[in-house]
Length: 251
Ligand SMILES: NC(=O)c1ccc[n+]([C@@H]2O[C@H](COP(=O)([O-])OP(=O)(O)OC[C@H]3O[C@@H](n4cnc5c(N)ncnc54)[C@H](O)[C@@H]3O)[C@@H](O)[C@H]2O)c1
Image (tube, helix red, strand yellow):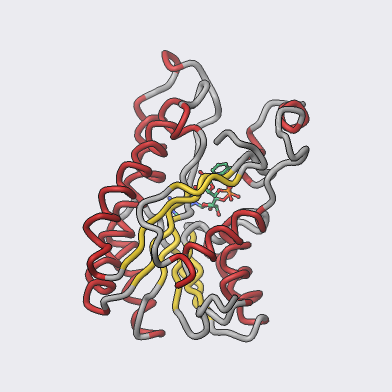
């Protein structure tokens, strides 16, 4: 199946983590012939990913952007347009989760940070990219949500509320954008051993694996495959959906 991604241009946020989903997404897009703006609050990480994107034979741009700051996001979009002249794909992958704690112990600062990065960041990047996609009458936006946003988090209420917001936002924007040939969808990953796992209590990942029918954690490549499919024309009839990639029936 030809995914039709050759010479497309993508922005992937949160792609600086060398063990995270964003890097795998950027590299998989690159292997399909897509040029990639690699964005992260961590510029060194973004540069490292961008080097590997270029090694796949396409063009890359490393950008420092904090998705909670709208001026950063606008600068990210302007720099991408200046280099590539278009943006076909936006992957809203940047995310954080306050280490698990009972709701009554969570501070306003922690609550606001989870909402700011996961939900407002997705909203800001979408707001900055959408006018350009509407003008081009083409676009693919893939948002990374979480099972916590579907079934509620346990001790991660702000994160869960933000990710539930991402799903609702995705569905609403998907309806507005579809007439412009813009597809907006979500991927909901299973538990993976990325930067997120650093805050997991000892033994948690081993316990989680025992509950997964497929018998292993989700790998960044599993998520990259799903994102790249939704970012391709093979998925042009898919609008406002949540693709659950967990090795399980459950999100
Ligand atoms: N790992 C999991 O088990 C899991 C499960 C479900 C969903 N997710 C989601 O997957 C996405 C990717 O996370 P990951 O697991 O690869 O973790 P990760 O920590 O490896 O990567 C997250 C990246 O986001 C970047 N980032 C953080 N705050 C940012 C900001 N304000 N602006 C720009 N970039 C910022 C970080 O620098 C990092 O590179 C997140 O949205 C996360 O919520 C992860």
